[in-house]
Length: 259
Image 1 (cartoon, helix red, strand yellow):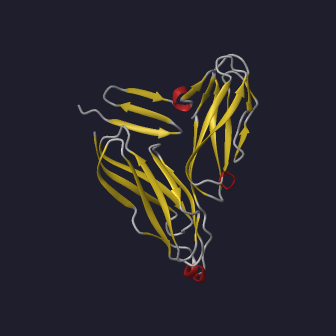
Image 2: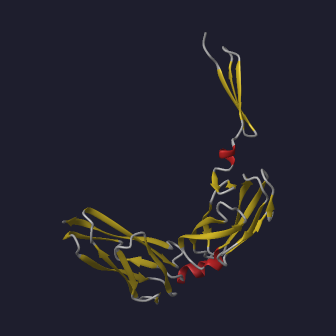
Image 3: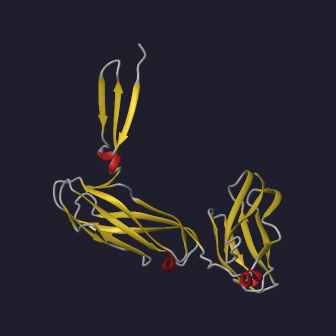
């Protein structure tokens, strides 16, 4: 006889039925499912608030669940917090085996940054195991551009990159490579270099100017240190500018490194 299996999911409850054996198994979300992170006596649904992509003028709120896994009341208060983050606590005293929430509001206009950024919030508790708790908050901030008229489009700043990738060929390990990436402002308003960011400490960057006037060429200079590097290598740098058509540009240095 063939076995038949049916799955019913409703309000987090999954029912498995095997008609040939007459067995029904109910599976509710476990404590680890609902509060997968534990710091001392406090369980949390997460220790990271992922804001995701957010405009530079935007405010966004996210909420996480918390649970007191201890045997005594747990006091909770806000510790060190960056000024662009606002924390709301569902309670300041959480009874044993009770749950509550923490809401985090992200104000990107107060952060005044671009690209991927990470901050930390501190919570102070009376937990004898680990009194200070840390929550990470991440965001990827994109510049906000208001809707443009046809007149705006005709005069807006426009970046034209002469190149976005440079191959330095084959070099000896420990050699330092310096290259200038030229960007021309083909618009009629100032082009701003907001920020440059690399994921590797082996790259240093500088800009000839933060403001490129209409019709002028600016330069992003990258210095790459190949110390302790070997083989085919590619290093990338993110450049954030106020060009509405492409506010984030990736430039690359690549080549091959020999010992």
